[in-house]
View 1: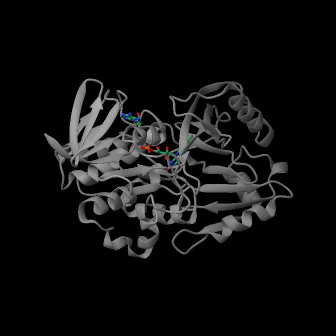
View 2 (view 1 turned 90 degrees about the horizontal axis):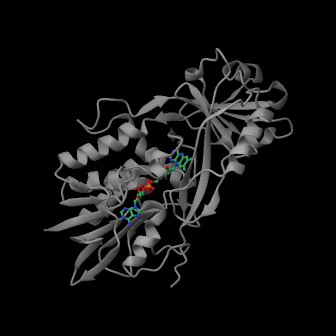
Amino acid sequence: MIYDFIVIGAGMAGASAAFELAENSNVLLIEAEAQPGYHSSGRSAALFTRNYGTPLVRKINALSEPFFQAPPAGFTDRPLLHPRGALTVAAPGKETLLDPVLAASTEDNPVVEMAVADALDLVPFLRPDRLSRAVFEAGVMDIDVSTMLQAYLKGFKARGGTLSCRTKVTALSNNKGTWTVNAGSTTFQSKTIVNAAGAWAEQVAKMAGLAPIGLVAKRRTAIIVDALPGMDVARLPCVDFSGSDAYIKPEAGKLMASPGDATPTVPQDVQPDEMDIAIIADWIERETIIPVRRIAHSWAGLRTFVSDENPVMGYDPTVDNFVWHAGQGGYGIMMAPSLAQALAALCQRGRFPDDFSSTLTEIASLGLSRVSLKRNG
Ligand SMILES: Cc1cc2nc3c(=O)[nH]c(=O)nc-3n(C[C@H](O)[C@H](O)[C@H](O)COP(=O)(O)OP(=O)(O)OC[C@H]3O[C@@H](n4cnc5c(N)ncnc54)[C@H](O)[C@@H]3O)c2cc1C
């Protein structure tokens, strides 16, 4: 059979796009690994932070929020978002770094100044001598990523879609408007390809003879440590430390910490580097009163960006019916709902959803013809 769409990659980008496309089309979703979400989508910090990323990413995050708050009927009976809040703190001498954080405050999503004493009360692991100013954003939330991914996949199958795991695409060719996708000795055909292969998106495009778009995969490390004895971890907010990219957030009764590293690396099943683990453990002991006696768990994941750090979504102008859905950076979970809706509308109706009108021109600018993408080869 010839599918309408073959989506390559069952991370959050591919699963959400496949779900939206399957409402009106015949879709095959192909994943190299045994489990969808094995790479970046299963390794995130699982935060919904409206005020994170480029100005356009922030608008896309905001467009996604209604889906998170009220997904379509039957999608899941569990909430996708849980209140968390984020405290951003500044050490002595760095107080003005919080000005832009405060300036992002809106009526919908307030960011407010918090007295230092209240901040210490809220987050008892902070060092009083390292805390000179604090601001609080209540609208930051935890995303139930696992529920979200499973709901996309369940909904996709309910709409008649087919998921094929352990199926690594090895070759792509186009003959008279039909794409042939080879996965080892297995062959599939479709009218359109959606390339949602995350860090591997350029490798997939290369199989189709397409030039790279400047994607760079960057490793980010996370560790899990014990909280202080007796600390009520569940009520803690996420804590961002201005002047560094490091953050700490509650994670299943313990604390997750990341140095916020962004080390360029080749696409791979990325593992944490011992040096990055040592750096974040040492940093926790210097910036907080948490003694790092043991690291319960550590991991690393890839955040993949093009140079302008906006996602890349749209038809490749150099070949027929090849759609990129890549460059999700550090925001791919929270952007997924609105980007998937935009992609399906573009592919099936040739235009973006009407309710995206205020950001329409900018969403359209996520395409491959933007000047900031330097294509070589
Ligand atoms: C430490 C960390 C913290 C993060 N925190 C957040 C956060 O708080 N909030 C947020 O929104 N985002 C966050 N992110 C970013 C988010 O995780 C990513 O943007 C998102 O997961 C990217 O999804 P994806 O589907 O594009 O990529 P992936 O999840 O990597 O999916 C791509 C899939 O394509 C498959 N694939 C590749 N090549 C082939 C092939 N040849 N054939 C078949 N399949 C193939 C891969 O196996 C993979 O499963 C974080 C990321 C990291 C690493």
